[in-house]
Length: 557
Image 1 (spheres, rainbow, N blue to C red):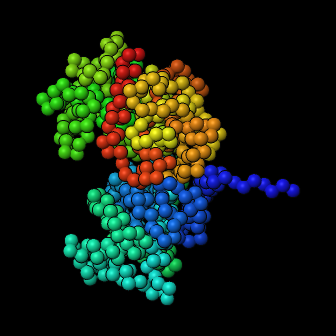
Image 2 (image 1 turned 135 degrees about the horizontal axis):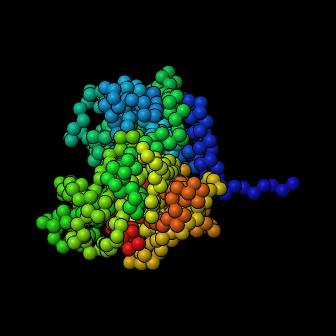
Image 3 (image 1 turned 180 degrees about the vertical axis):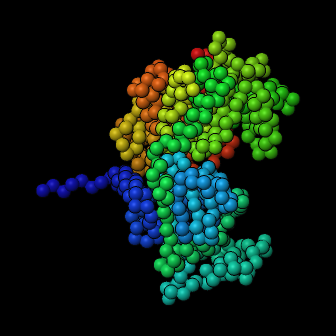
């Protein structure tokens, strides 16, 4: 009998991803689990087997992964490290209570501190958001176990470094500039990191101090919660309302109906409509900034103007552009329906054409286009929002088809064949872990970006950016898939679009599709993951280059 061939690392990793999602669905259906107990062990083991690139040294028992810790803390509510009871809920009215919202800086989700030990996280973006939260929490508890191991010595007593940290946290020793280095030296021993690495992470957390409790507090409470887990078990649970509502498009339906009401209210519903998924500043700035800021930046090229507007100290100028836009054809819709996706509607008939930047080639047509710009969706939420948006609008008198002419998707993605800031032009979306593949005719071609470094090929729509490692990504890049990048929404958008155009007949079959992504990271390069930091000014040029290409394609049609 022949011995079956050993699994490759890529196959093992893909099985680990599948196991993670099976386990997550299982505990979601069950309703609760203990992340530090037996019920949480399968998640921790699967994450360790996968060894995601973004979590760096997760499998090193001697080192706490610091870049991954900062990444996770930026995406979870402040105080998560000292919370024993975490409940994931739907929109259940907590915002009207006397709790006060906690919103993580890098993930727009409403969270509520109920008491010292309990915190609620509101989930309105579907299963992708649940998977995202559970993955981050699994990593956090994994690192907490490492801290616990270094807080106790071989005799079962607290280590000297841990006792010193306790003195700082309890206020017996005041931390100030003169003894900060001493405190960091204790922390570095507990973390298994060098003094330099520890100091670097301390200041990285300090840069965003209003949204986290700082390195000392994080390390102490992570270790304390893990050390007391047997006597005081932790619990992550899911509210009955969340389990009942998930996947039912409740939030997306309300969100989409509001957009269509506004189109009808302003008599824009019969004009050619172009849907754009992008950030909420680049379209607005391309159309209005040159006119609104003429006295500040007269005749400045659009790219230079964009860089100036991206500077932190120019918030007042960004506000001035926004006010001018609202007076000249832009309708701003802040989301109050639970999707966390704000929307801008542009009536291009009202835009001052004479002072548009030279990079925008506006053509006067008989029916000037209407632009619907929606902020980024999150994972599976892209299907919910696009599916609902493309449905006919039911007015009090009749059903009105959405006269959609084009759909443009601009997003950030991980790149596999280039570096941060490069551009990817997809020819198909391949949904990881499923047989769902979506080839399509992209109105964008590589030749549209010949003045910039760009790559063309299949894009992998992944179940979560936190769950990718080099083996899986190298497989997609080097095999016959020849993938150029990975993102989280493309297949979901395309599923909704193809359903609306080819099955339901909600929109025309020949609607033009434009997908273009700019690289926020390269997870195949050491130090190039999302955990290593943001794009900064590197992202300005590709963002505005793609934006101008989208607008010019719309205006020339």
